Amino acid sequence: MKFNNKTEWAYNKFHPDKIVYIFADGIVEVTLEQFLKESPDRTKEDFYRLKAASDDAFHEWDKLDVTEARHSEPLDEADGQGKCSVKSPEDLIVERIDRLQHEAYLETLKPLAWKALDKLTAVQRRRYLLHFGEGLTTRRIAEIEGVRHQSVVESLQAADKKIKKIVGQG
Image (cartoon, rainbow, N blue to C red):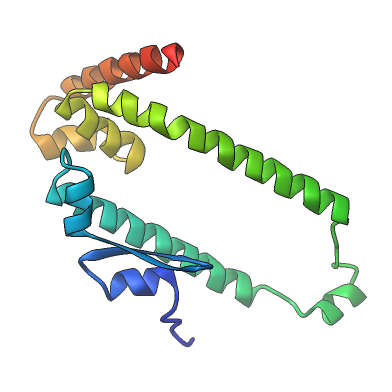
């Protein structure tokens, strides 16, 4: 298999001090310095955790693309076997509108999410992001931090309560 060096995963892999995003109209690179300047309450470790998470996500997407390509069939072969299905233009438009509306809705939630995260203590925020952002178990977080498992659980419950209160206020 030929390595595609134009994927987000490849760009990220070969730029260890940048998080790279590829868009149709160009490439956006976020450096450690930019990250720290724009997020003064964040640390170098936060940047590298985010970098590692983005590398993992981009790698997963890259693997899915390869898997999909290996399992794709030429349309002329698929059509003869009754496997070809084409959506109507109306269905495509409705799907696009739904996706755009969903994306717009998610954008409206971002300021509320940042407001909620800012109300958490540093410990709550770290544990919340490790648990819900990076998928670590409460036991693993307790092990990493050298604290009791119950402390992590209680911290996450308190964080969840604060977030629900803020989200409820809108």
